[in-house]
Image (cartoon, rainbow, N blue to C red; front, side):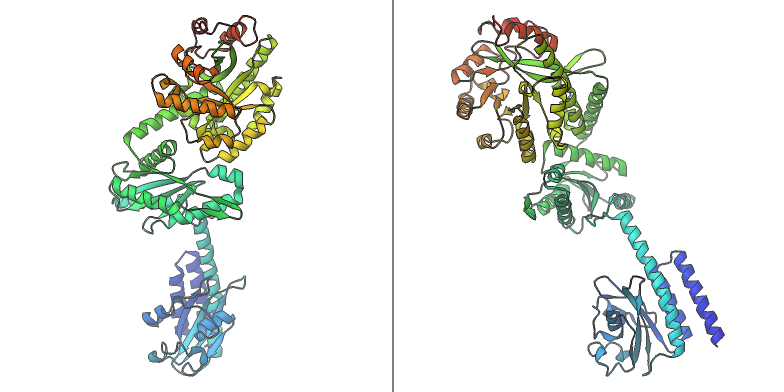
Length: 623
């Protein structure tokens, strides 16, 4: 008999190890163990339970016990008096109860086994190599007996096999989680999302796809640190994932998430789903001394109408998100056919500007800033121009969408800094009285945190003092959720002698109170106000008020887009002393600016008369 048992245990061991190697389910392996153990130990009824990391029991295999018995144990917390199995798991050692009816360990639970005729239970903990109890292996009997030597031998073998099988399952689960779940947020990752998307497309039932982008995440990381940033992402991910249990949420990477909206067949339903996410994401997030009000932007597409394959649907939802980030931050934009055309056009523009930068075809043109009373040139604004491969010069307005790409904006600013520094050095070497040149910067220039170093190194290399630069920052850059970072960077440059101008004032989100907190030397009134100043009384009142406030704050005012002598006269009457626009000159290249400075710069002996100023300058052929 001993030899026979040994052979049977060896066969059982080989059978289980082979099942593990072939990837059989843990439940199937547990069932085999129970069935073979019951054959080896006649009269024994076998049960295997697992113990989760929260210390709760879950049935794995008990083929000879009724389902209701196993279900009653599911989720039961282990403890010092939780039957044989719960107590064995709690103590980490075998527990032998020979009389369930009277043993205090079973006082709360004896009504479960006694009606089945079960009178004794011997349970042993299944222990992983790191010492954790991961399960229990138990023999029940219908008599009041303890384990025999044979049963001890059987259980010893089964415990060893259970440990191997359960640890193998843990490794599989861990690898699966690493492959299909995001480690920071615990949400399904991009690979898992692709599976879910393919399944829904195969099922061919209506659903919607939402792409969610966290607004200004890079700025949060840059200003508050990545520790806060990680908590911020994790918190928002939890909110997005909890927006609706019926909408599985996945983290696609970085600041982007995706949600699949089942049974969604209309824009109204997609809009409702997006609004759930927007509402769920709202609410202050506080970590330590930092508090941020989060904002997300969403784009969406419908399966079928907006794409019947994964690639098209994905791309169109992405187009919608891109458009939402450009035009409707903090809101939702559904896909429309025209968005694809606009996106492709933007991609082509980015490619065109990228290539022009590589080939040295981006140029700096300049528009004079003049005194309205004398017509003298007191400064210039540098404006980017692109020379096409056929030699045509095109203005920035024709490739402006490409500058929404931070990489392109960054590269263009570097190009403009180098061009402007070289031109200023040339004018200074000629003895021309150049005062300031305004250089436009974008959000992309502030995101890497190195704008000061770039400006200083470029102008030091050209031997140009920083006092000749005016940094032009528009309201959208100041107010686009990055105002603290931008304001600090601008203040650092002002401390080194650079002047700062608030460009396009009146078109963005700033209020007059921000003039007290933004580091500003110059306010540039947007052309939209100047256009109506002579015909629209409210515009004149607003401009007059801005001029008066700026003067009292010791800030200079420049009116942009001055195109008529009537506008210039109105501005002068309101107290504005400086203007720029087609009335004085179109933007022109450095060679033409050299001529203008030689004739009309403030400080030359024969500046142009104010009344006649526009005419000789406007005769220049400029872009």
